[in-house]
Image (cartoon, rainbow, N blue to C red; front, side, top):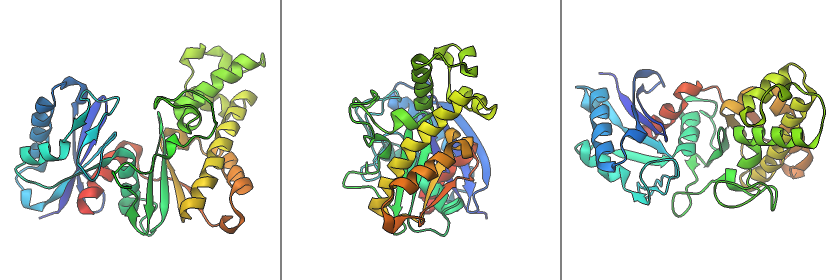
Length: 314
């Protein structure tokens, strides 16, 4: 009987469920529309049914269920005021799903933490005890591992590195503050930089072929790989801001590696070179050259459910 775990990624649009073996192979995958269930009881019923169908008859072979979700607390098993989910305030998701599954163990944590767990079990950090995963997507998330354990803090919400302020009084952030890292170094941050730079100059650029509101990080990347000077400067600026922040992150945990994950990380050297240069310029001398900068090798379409399943094995 082949052992497996269930990994669940809860997003504002879709909830993806994966049946994962110990080697990180996705044996089965299914999904349901998160937004189609504004009532949490209906959602738990639908999710529980989908999980049980995915498990099948071999319940004894299932190590458990791991879930990654926004604003999720590992300690309480609750989702707390997640902006992009249909249920507000505090949702005791762990307890509700365990009840629906007849007592099968469920572990819940923040979605960025699952990325770190996935790297530790299946990815680039398999032999590391100290590393940081930075997720560069619509926002900037992070999972911090020290001495082989995720850093949760007193309430399970530690490690929000995307909301470290890097530019005091800077860009407005969805969290309600200004100048957060994710307003500059997320995919949406790159698009904001592009629009800002285009307004400040009349320089010719391929980016002017796209309406400002339609510019995305992909638009900027495609222009940069064609040698567009303005697009290349956007990546240079983004990498500088990210590298300066990473130099500070290195100082507080002395990680063996920082692993970048997400669509923006796939820009390769356009982003990585200025990040490395900014780290080298700003990191404390005792740490210089001691932290590797790595791009995740976990397939992006599987990363969330792989990381969630790692919670069950852990």
